Amino acid sequence: MSNASTAVHGDHHPVDPNVPLEYHEEENSLRITGFWLFLGQDMILFSSLFATYIVMHGRVAGGPTSQQLFDVTGFTIETIALLFSSFTCGLATYEMRRGHRNAVIGWILVTMALGLVFLGFEVSEFIHDVGIGATLQRSGFLSAFYILVGTHGSHVTVGLLWVTLLIFQLLRRGITPVTARKVFLWSIYWHFLDAVWIFIFTVVYLTGKVI
Image (tube, rainbow, N blue to C red; front, side):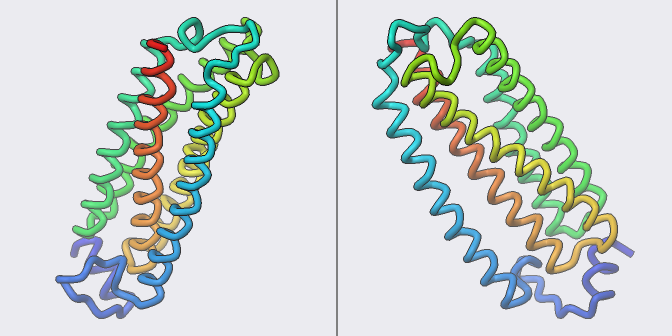
């Protein structure tokens, strides 16, 4: 018997094959709508940080500039890792809807590994920059840079901790409308972080190496 059959029928939830499992209960639909509203607020936060960074980009106060600091190899690897993690996250959602619990967990673990690669390079970048005197207090540019990129990095860290807990729930309960909703919400969150990073990659790193 498949994971889907065991989890869904075992919990006595009605199954409509035309409706994604995470929407099978009205409460789930409301929670998903609420999460979209939360992401809207998060979008406002990042928009404010982007606006601040753009204003402060040229205010280096005689300190290091973006052209001097940004390492093309480093931020390219970060970008590739996060983009691939978004793809593997999508595969986890796909397998979740097919009821394949072990495949869901497998793709989540791959996504986590790519997320850790991303964080590893970001932390290394910060340590290197601070080591050469490019600290948060050095200039307005560096303050805006660290806060914007660091805020995104902290969101990625939260996403990794969140999905770690989801793995334990999937192992214990299987794929049910509740665990499906949680996996779906996490996937939305992760794709959102990937979209934000594309803007950081473009506005901060690519532009910073040219201007």
